[in-house]
Length: 404
Image 1: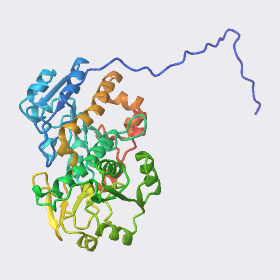
Image 2 (image 1 turned 135 degrees about the horizontal axis):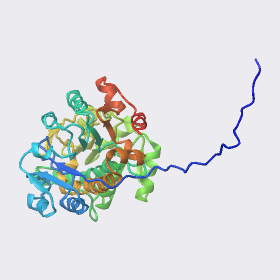
Image 3 (image 1 turned 180 degrees about the horizontal axis):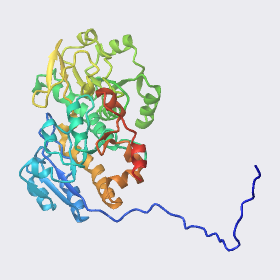
Image 4 (image 1 turned 180 degrees about the vertical axis):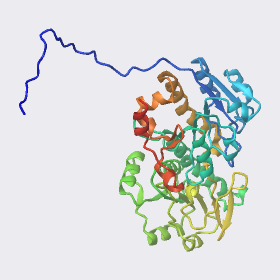
């Protein structure tokens, strides 16, 4: 079959098209609701009155449930003067388009969820229930988690802030239970002239471990740190700026050091599962009577075999005459500082969301925000949650691309 050359009419002309750029839409208006946290051990609030005043000054609405800030010592009057509306019940608060919480969504709160709502809160992966996720999916919720939210530098700002608070608080807590007022053995954490310094063992060289070490060194204690990551141990030494006694987690060495320590801190991180048990029952039984264990990793099961979760009201128990402090969510004990830290991250994020024209647009323009989204319009986009509860996983990038 003969081929014919293409024929172009002399009158045909070609014109280049103008380049089409992705232009941000006009600024949107936000309606933000802050409910009172009724969950166990939670005193924080996700937005402080100062942050609310900035949000309101930018033309947005904020409603706060009455007494929502009481745990962090913020009154209804503080929020009212900042421009927020005080709501008398949760149902009114959940009329908002955006719900901002300092604790995970509870089963009771699921009844108030509105279609296509946007929720910013922690997940607490270990305690999340399938029923809550399924109800959120039915309501086509878009949800952003504190734990996975990243900033422009690729770090988790809220997790880091909470870890800094927990680490700094460790030595204050240990000192509290070593003194006579709390039936401790009457030891001053740190040291004075002519007296050997208090010996502190820290298991874990992450952010919690680093800030615990900084505080302990600042008050004159002797610090020894264990971690299986040589990189984390080197980074900690570089950050603190001095030579520290460090070691990989070798059971015989660890057991020997625990025998003579006054304070032992569990500061191990986890990779989505349970924290590994590092210190055995036998190791604890050989520790000095009256010594204090502060297991910060109790949020994920704890790294001491003898650890059992306690509460802010009853924070300690004794085993082998060793004082155990195993309160989950230590930052909630310092609720005002923790609330300010969370608020410093969320307030600029909410303003940016409005400037972008809504969360859908923010996710499109800010790739780092995507890591924090665990549900998008009712589709589960967190792989760990989908595996844990055997629910369908959908890639967020594909969902976003399909909507463009």
